[in-house]
Amino acid sequence: MMLQRTNLKTQLNKEKFKVTSNEAILNKVNKILKNVDDANHKILDKVASGNSTDRNDFNFEKLKSSEIYHISQIEKICVTYRLRFLDSKYFKGKLPYEAISKIKYLEQEHETSLDGFKIMAPSKLFKLENADDPLLFAPIGNGYYYLVHKWGNDISPYRKLLMWPYKNFENFMFALFAISLIFTLLVPSGMFSKGEGSTAEFFLLFIFMFKWVGGIAIYYAFAKGKNFSSAIWKSKYHNA
Image 1: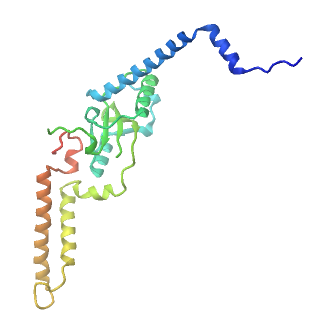
Image 2: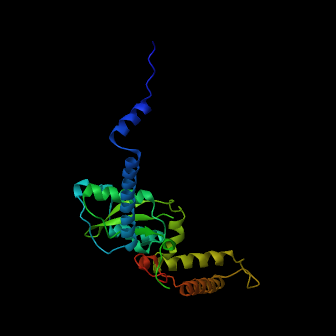
Image 3: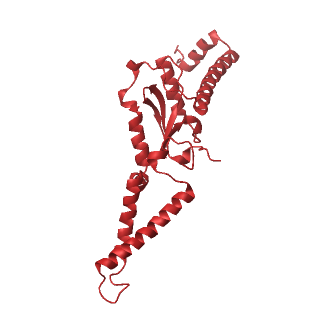
């Protein structure tokens, strides 16, 4: 007589039902899922509230040195790429599940509750007061921050170049000078005189171009309430 082949799933179910009923299993799973949801909501509430604190009780032996950054390094990147570094409560984007998982993992690993989160991102991703690539940090202390999670798309390689004139006043003036010089060179020689254009004519035309370009740039800056990147990287105000 041939023995019937054993179905492992059937045997597994028999073993499972020896211990508990279907209802008990569902209740247990629901309880686990509810605990997970409650933990996730708790983390989201902490990030959304953005409580101000300058340190967390990390276990330094478990920190990755590659994820530790000083405020001076963060400032340099913010100024270069015209980004903001603000409390997480101002962030209007959606916090990805990976970020929540990493916070939860860090809290379990370091046996602490993290707070004081900050986010580095372009201004448009913040709910700034006045009426592409976020990074979530947690403070360690003494001006150091731990990178918890990075998400979204990488910043355009052209952003550094495009934002260079807004970095500070010196860059702004140099950019105005360069643009004015280019516009002056584009004007045909002798356009405003019968003969070949002279050095004096070129200089006067350059001064005119410089005033014209500078006037437009300054008007736009005042109309839009813009400021230099070195002045706004930690500002919570839109018109800053």
